[in-house]
Image: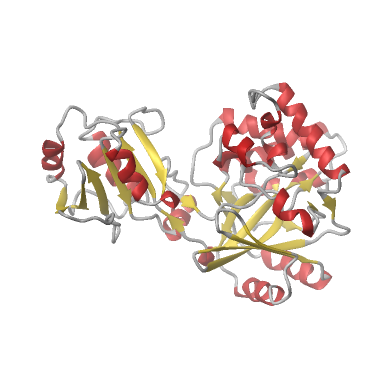
Length: 413
């Protein structure tokens, strides 16, 4: 069972929220962040290297020192203000006319260490340590992690009741996504939420594996350094936005390759026909979107193709073997293109589905890439099955959108 608690967030006054709120640190590089950051933007705290001219190494001590200085300054200037009591918060996001409703809570460090917060991706120690530094120096979870959990009708009903009220924050960001936010201050509602989550067996990391590991490990560090540890200290908890499974939708995460391993487009297409039903979509001007599981879209030599994996080339009884990223990796990247390790190969790149399939065509037509492949998205059921069975997804399998905006709430300890 998972354990959560409310917290007194640091967050911007309503009149500043749109200026403070920012995209997560890992979806834009330093140059993009510098160009995007307004005076009050949280990017000055999450990517403090942008405050130097020229931009400095984001992993340098001056950058870390600047993060601490800016975090304090934002509070001194009233751009981040402490709530008067511990609360939960509803955070809703709207994209393409669909709204998903999550709860901002504090999750428990021990749940991560005990495996009750389940992951589906590998983490790298260097990336964990980088995020741990930021948590350590601020004694804060400045950016939330993104979890999901099995739907609970009573929680859904309670959230539906709360969002009938006017939101504290309600704005559309530059990317066109809507963000809506309600503090939950009623003590009975807070108590009920805490109690309802006691019956939830697990959280699942949707996005933010490195941030989750970092937050939990810093909490464990603080415990080890406190001889008077009781288990009630605030460092035992870290901030998460938790969404019911039914509200989330994974979008496609696609691939482009730089070469065809010595083959011409014609011989490559011919080689594909052994394991795929190949349909050339002649004269098609619109990108072909994969229609079902085990169906792929390919763009090569100015033309779109439909590729459907032949029966017997995949294992639907295996949680990993049934994934289309596995099928494509085994039958195309490994077998035909000799790309063995997707994590390290410089011959392959990955394109989030939020960019659209025209981005795939553009990168091939420019001559930068030789071919592009679009995949049918992984389902939430597949993600949860993989996490429950202790398996790990191949790299670059899931893409969640919209991303959580950082700065709507911050947890300190």
